[in-house]
Image (cartoon, rainbow, N blue to C red):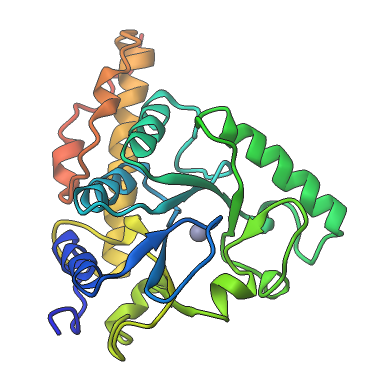
Length: 263
Ligand SMILES: [Zn+2]
């Protein structure tokens, strides 16, 4: 099998998708009943909506529909920021679903009451729904605490419910663990949920730590450019921030001249 040795590159990911397609897998949404041959393809967008758009295009090219889960509490991106609103419309135009990536850690150290949880999730769903065409139905917990596993909730579907998590196979790339445990090493399961974090992948292979360092330097490069344009040159020009292609060499984005001190 070509995908037995995992490189965290878009090329490898394309081969992985091709293997599932060649096998006859069907890609489903969380609201559908799952049958033999069905795959739920999920993306938790922890760092980079831009990289999410990259994988979204690769999937659409193959006729695959996935679900992209976004944080509304991320220190790295804001869902209402214009380039990200543009990414949402593109994702939806490509046929993908959007869900809420919810961090319990933003609110509680221990398990909250069900009412408190429902209230916070509803508030975050409302924020995300402002920038998507469809209502938000599904929630994926970020760094899930034990108490969310195999549990159902009255107001939303959770990706860690038994029907998506323990009744079917589960293959997640968290911390790039596919290097040690390739997702298809025991063949293609009859039904499975696949979790792939677009931020961990790139044009060239890189370790988890290298990937995070690059993302940090790119984020810093964009922040620097934004500060310079908005507050030094006072151009208020947002267009440049809509450069959606992910870049692997931090250098490409840090060629921006550093802001000159204003007098
Ligand atoms: Zn996450």
